Image 1: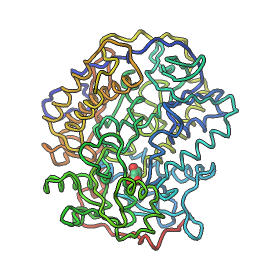
Image 2: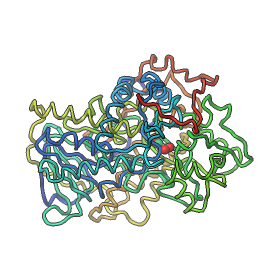
Image 3: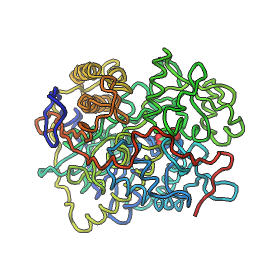
Image 4: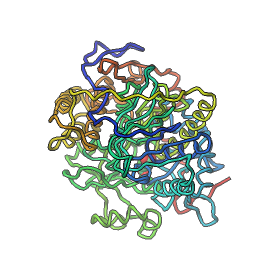
Length: 600
Ligand code: SIN
């Protein structure tokens, strides 16, 4: 789509990109019903399902592989919440808004921060065991962009794993309850809609036994998509293999609004394993820098000093950009993280999983510099929701990384993602409870899904997924330009058209999801001719508030074409954020060894 000047508020522009309504899949061979279907079993999906249990008659939780396979279990650093008397909601809100570079929804951020501590206490009440200091108080640490110690962690660097364990244990305790059913190995294929356009269920591919096997239709009064992110769209990512954007892509095909897709977070410190290393890469948590590690280039220069008031703990987009610039300036493909001064015993106790993984791969953080480079980490955009998690389609909710609640703006603040999944899952469950009780969401009328169209790719021949990942990384990755984005769009168009004429398979559906999301993301990125947060344009290296203080909203129209609308953000959003400040903010960080035991 070519434009004349910056996009105009509210104007709908049609693109040449065409996306089918459905993936090519066999007709459903089985059906089931529920009041609410929750798709995904990370913190967002599990919290929604558990909170809905006993409030509605029947909740169906479906997950693509097994319950603990998604991104939540991989989260290292922690979950941010105001838990210390030295901290305040206003400060957490401020740090979140600054990281989001003017594009956060302030009300969503307030909800996140104000409801965060209660939600975390509830997590503790169901058994989540966060690390504590010697006096038994919860230990709090710091990550990039935070001016206070407010990150709870568990098992040192295994926070997500502990949260996932606690939620799954809570689910196991109620497995006998007929009001909640779990289906594993169930890939969401597409959304079902009724004649009025309301979402009325999903089609699923289940690797199961007996009646529920193969493609089926699950119908419900509401669907909650909590399928995580789209990291596998890039050649290297910290996301697990299951992160193929299935929920986001199904929502896009069904006509839901997706927004802020161009804002992709690249984590600055991912262990660099060489150019050929693709797929999920080992993350070196920002909490390692929170405890005092720092970045150096090949000459040993600390290049973050003087670059930002928070130096190595600047927001992620700032650090990633600085690393990329340094790599270019020095002609290298990585920089280094120096943790050696923290000492073996501290590192082993505080970051056991990271140390173990590094050593397995031949790097000892206690004695050597770690080679690191940015890799895809988080989708700040997603399926657009309001403050209750409702999307633009009646009956459809989205939560966690799948959603765009407005909390993250152009760049997510570290450790706000688990918190967002937790807080907004509760909001969704409460909204659904109320609406279902009020009869607002009708029973779905049985529908047979329309036959899948024949003009779309089905089975992946050869290396189609790798081709998508390469095209996205080369042209719509950490640094973009008009020509790189055009090349990527053209390549994705070819890959979208590749069709070997066979019936689809789960792998091919996942890859087609990546193609559809790649097209939408690249389209959004091509329209934003500025650099902001997770969107870096080398041809437009400055932030341009006059023309781009807005959200890019993408939607598939009934004729299959993607359209783009611009939704402005009030300029007042920037006031008081000091986004151009060059003077260091006071650093009130306590030394790691003094450690934080500051609970009310
Ligand atoms: C990290 O530990 O650096 C990742 C945490 C996050 O993405 O919020």
